[in-house]
Length: 432
Image 1 (cartoon, rainbow, N blue to C red):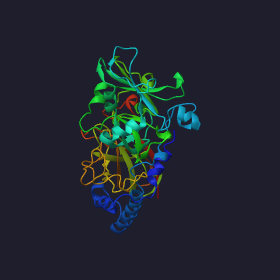
Image 2 (cartoon, rainbow, N blue to C red):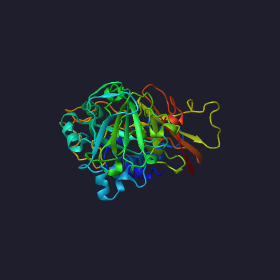
Image 3 (spheres, rainbow, N blue to C red):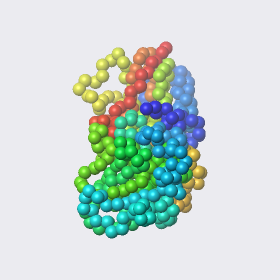
Image 4 (spheres, rainbow, N blue to C red):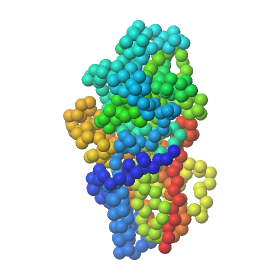
């Protein structure tokens, strides 16, 4: 599946970041080794100035949030539910006016629920009722959508919704509830069914500094569209995309211990938390001998955060380190993590993140409208830097993230079934 729409979004010139960010990078050039050896002083100054200017231009082209229609699509259904004819969309509950959510006891277990929400008796949750809950309970947070088996993120958004637990309590469960199973609309065809699950403990209580699981109805300040899973979808802050069920229609409260996720048999770790990984945005394929190499990229911020990003340039004609499959001992060089932008982009209204907004964004100071810490878990951070100029030849360029515990990608979870974490590699040819 193509990642191009996502990376194009980050390359567009939007001037979202302070110019001082690139100046800070320039101040760190010595630390990256650009001031040592090789070039004469005058030549070095000119080469570094050109590389720095190229890096400045790349940084100015970064945009934090992804416009909703530029997320990389990962979809199920034939036909896709949001492409149904207008009358079918309405009858399927795929419009805000016709949407209904059922919250029911699992008929295959002994869960006790006093007030099930059913379509048949007119008690199912309507969109208007959800908006009534939103007046008191709505939350917003940044989250990067990423696929368990795709190497790069699909897009980053500001998601808004009502905690799922508020609706579950409306149904008045009393006992024998261990898991929450949830389902999306898929053409009334069991073979197309898309479903997921969580422990009831995760739904009812949030881990420290983690937003709640939400019934999401807005993305980047606007109603969530059909192709993004609207009118209402699940958004689980810490989870990969396949858990964030689109076109939500039904929730079962069950006493069964097992998950029922669509991908439970797909060789995925269905309860895996997001990993921290680094990826390139600018991928230089050619360079000039002795000229510093400007790099920009993004890091997906997993459960244990991102403390730094590093890059490594290795000659192709030299063997890779022996007995070091994850390159833990390679001569990595630190890049610069960029601070939060003043304008988050992505089509977000300018006053959507700022002082006094309601609801406030999770992890942001309501008085200043700025993040209380950066980067934020389950979102992303941009990075940039200059690698020293090298001699002519063929090279392999790699990048990796280091989490807040000092563990370097692809560790601590290098196995694909719990999320992609491989170290990205790019071929680079340097000519005289």
